[in-house]
Length: 167
Image (cartoon, rainbow, N blue to C red; front, top):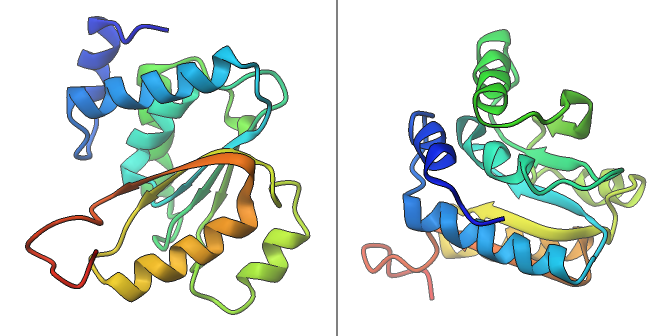
């Protein structure tokens, strides 16, 4: 799917910080994954007010789901923000979204993941990273529980020269 201008304009209107180039890059990566007909779910650590879900929604295949982890509690207002982001940009069914507002740093995270159908079953994971190098390391360890053998990780905000603790 080539990123079309109409879709870019819709996504630009959503809250969040993705540029047109980032949207095009997401589409390119996910298109390449789709080209090899690789089944697996899509995941994110950090929901970005639903913008990442809007990017993912056009790349879901039948029986695939989106796993979204966010430290932000899913209040009615935040849920509406996410739902509106999805509705404005795609025809994704909300049943395809699994939202977890638990903290990925919680000690129960590994057990929760291992007992879910997402365990070692994500083909792509986006991490909206913390600015702290140790947090990013911890997120990558958690990602290992979710990614399939050939899964891909994209990390945002990990190589910012203003935050020298990240390498």
